Image 1 (cartoon, one colour):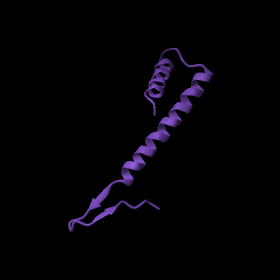
Image 2: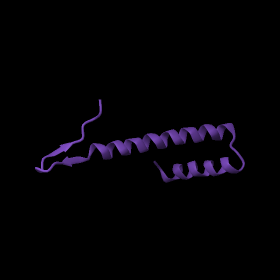
Image 3: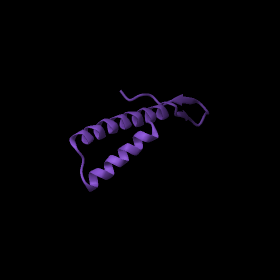
Image 4: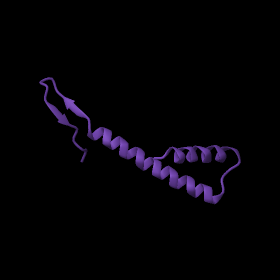
Length: 67
């Protein structure tokens, strides 16, 4: 996510606490937050999928997805 978008999310959050947001700004905030959360989840999934477990014998295996 671009730094500008994160700054915009923060700017809208600060404005919401002080003077409130217009309906258009509320919609923009929701869209930006959704985009941020999707990006964050994708990054977490990538990290978890790259984790390798090494047992006492030195065998390496990936973590299996929960069914």
